[in-house]
Length: 307
Image (cartoon, rainbow, N blue to C red):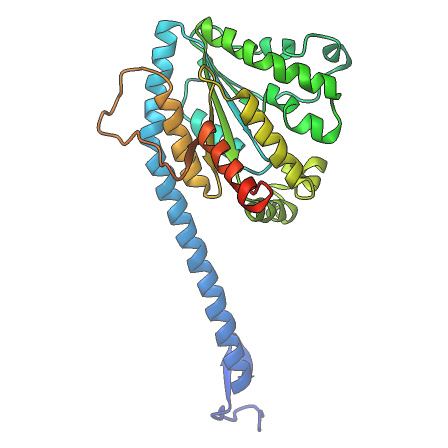
């Protein structure tokens, strides 16, 4: 092939971005550009889908403002517990619940490890110190139920401390509700494969790496232990006065939407939009009692819990 100055290009070469390419190179470049274009289009579709999903949450977020106003006027206290496995979507749901609420009348509480002084106090004391005043909502990103699941698995409490908690929490919550506090207990349930996928994303995404803790790293290896503790927690603390609601959270958007509906349905306030669909999806929202039935059926059929 003659590439001397002034020689016209033959059919076997073409100039692209100032570089002469042969036919094979041109085919490869074309395939690479098509792949890059497909990736851009896919990302654009994802962004559009996310935008539509966030838009569809807004009527329910507007209802939350109305609910919050009702609590303020009636001086009613409200506590929402967000529990579940790591990477189950608790934090993202909390952000959607609070996004447009009046900051003066809600707080998100995520307590760290107790201090030496706190470990010598009544177990519930540091949580009670965070409880809402009249007209306020407090959202616990993990709560006293750490003692029912995480602490016994990792040896952060003694067997006696665990049993003391399991015996005491039912009466504690019954008294809380009896004195007028609205208590909503949400458990976010994610599958093992989906949790692993989310952990992998946390490892590689610099915006999410801060979420990955040592306990997260062990969560997959201790999956069956977490499942066993979940079953015991539901069996012993799902009550008529303080029931558990399980949210299937593999699909983050559906989990967030249905969690909003559960919260709205927990307070008898005057609706802003009566035509809005407030009925939770039965494939996403499961009562604690029903979840127990499902788990115990799994044990009978397979000899182990799967959820």
